[in-house]
Length: 136
Image (cartoon, rainbow, N blue to C red; front, side, top):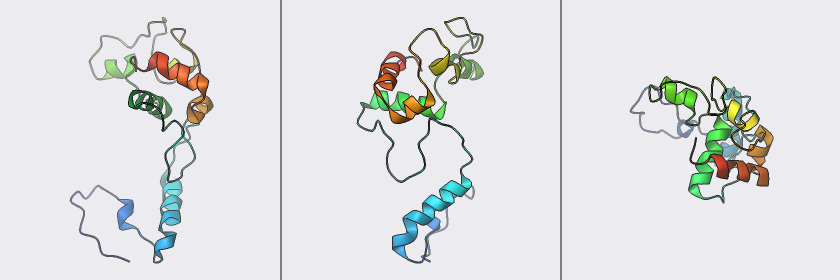
């Protein structure tokens, strides 16, 4: 194993510090560790591999929007309310709580799409992205 300099932050655990003996096995070793440590069960996120997910050819603003939706971390009313940047978490469609689970599948303010559609970045996903890109 190679000797790397000590990490500046004790809480940071980098894949860089874990390297297999044979360099050609390093990528598969990282993926194995990643699969072991990842406990996310989100259908919008592609299976783990060392390449960019579908949609990488999109404009940056669209790319950011689709990845916010995939990760369920958009700037929703619920999040803004939690950050005290909004007085309530109500969705313009009337739902009491606007979350990233509500927007793609239930909200009547825009088109609907599923996690699978977002993951594959189909035409329906791109229509959804175009509608929501400046809102989340």
